[in-house]
Image (cartoon, rainbow, N blue to C red; front, side, top):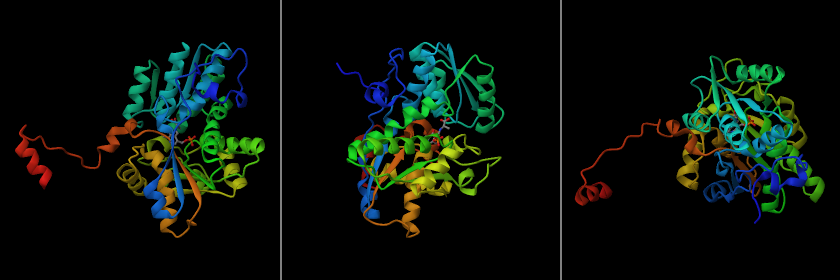
Length: 348
Ligand code: F0G
């Protein structure tokens, strides 16, 4: 029987040794789905990489499985991370799987409840701080330096090694890299990792490289304005980050690829989120929709050349944040349990 998972699937490109525990929850190998409505609307070939299909519902599992396996290999007993939610859910799951203690630092009241529920049920120690993500990451670094914990944020290079594998899968599925890779940018680990992955792939298979298009939320767009944002805000809580740890990696990915990092508004994120669900049948979380919001904005601005192949990374599932899903005034009327009453409503 072949065992699935990032460590097995991509072993030769990862820091796996004889001593690395082959941890897996079946992460990686996620679907690349053609976006039919979006392709028709833009005149481009657009694909969605459904990273919400990973075991804890976000792309974080790819890097986390590597970081936690390496932490276990090095004899660590505990892992720690700061998080806007998904990293904490993923760290908690893989730590549970590996028999390690997990502590997560989160900005109190600012992460989606599905993610909080995951960290809780997986058994993490949850430290909710009176401060934002950037502060939580600062404190995490301090705890890591004290030496008792392995940090599993994307400042840990093993995380980026695991995350780069998504680039391999996209290039394998398409038979080449896309012309454009569009993704949301928060702490900027993912854009850094994808760029590394496409470069490694290109060296082995002599393929072309994509242009990297990163999208930040307007109220949390330090890479767009070129300086940290002290008090970031956006409905896309996953990317509510004012001082990305992988700042330099993101700038390198942007500049070396001839790409760009630009901003989308919360209204544009909401519209793309709704579009993806209603037109493509894909339910992602608000931060993930930033990639498609960016593409639709380019289209409106007349800056999207037809005929290009574009992959949008949908980083997490919509089930993470049902409060957001139902926040747009959703109500449902209870009907009498009679066929006639139901028929009346259906015929309206
Ligand atoms: N999309 C989602 C759903 C995320 O959770 C994140 C980051 C990003 C995009 C941005 O990726 O940080 O590599 O640029 N979430 C982190 C967390 C910060 O703690 O879960 P990035």
